Image 1 (cartoon, rainbow, N blue to C red):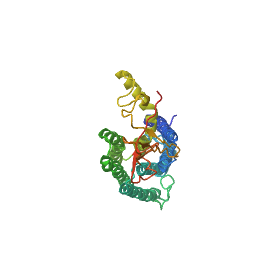
Image 2: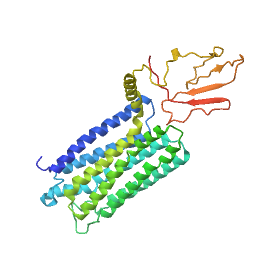
Image 3: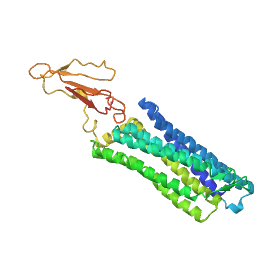
Image 4: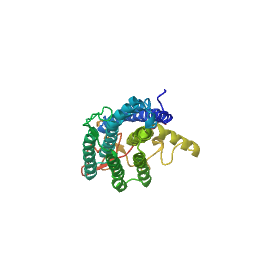
Length: 364
């Protein structure tokens, strides 16, 4: 189109690519939820709100690109300047604000589902309250940049607009600190869990992907400083829009990665297992045995009275000891789709052993 600048065309290509990527990841997130047959949680809702806000931001950005965003302000017509002013004052700012806040709520609510420790949940709720206060405060700030609100594109003699540089730095700095706190928050609890070291490292790396968004915000701080030093709102629009959208895109990806584990377990892990078995020349993976080939070495020990009628898949086994008397030992196993997220349904009573493990089923 004649009004588009090459820098605006570049921004448009970025938007198309990342909208498809993020859309696919969110569909995978919903697929994983359906696969687990779990409820639709609040963190799912918040990430969808963030996606809707991002689409709104992108629509506004397309409007700006079609009206010369990226060109020097001196090359724009009065009508294009008015449109750029309308975009900068309200729609883009509010869409970005709603998107970033929704992403933070999504991650923090996911934390409360993963970690059951009361002190951890209290920290998560405290951060949610802080983010909510930030949202209310900056929504008011963005709504009152100009008095009247249309002063930039429909000026009146008694109207005025304030300098936005201070609020830009304050908003970006707050988001930087909160995102860093969200990244650091689960680490002490994670490394205090009794699990293999490789699992702790893998989960830490997964959470560390959030550092990418912190790097993007540092980039935005530098870009904001540069735009203030060289004030040409239209010329810097495409740069600021790209960085702001990257923050939203990457934030939604980071918030969704932990929820994709069921898909990896169902579709990716079996493929890796088969490839590993094929390369090692073994029919069965290491430390896995076919139950039909396993025989109890003590012929005097027998198992009976297996009750599988319990709706929670509890199995009670009464074993005869070597002298033939019946022990009252009860072993209860609970099969659940996600042992990390959901707490045990039953609290073990004295005289019982409560076993909770992931169980992988394969057809031989």
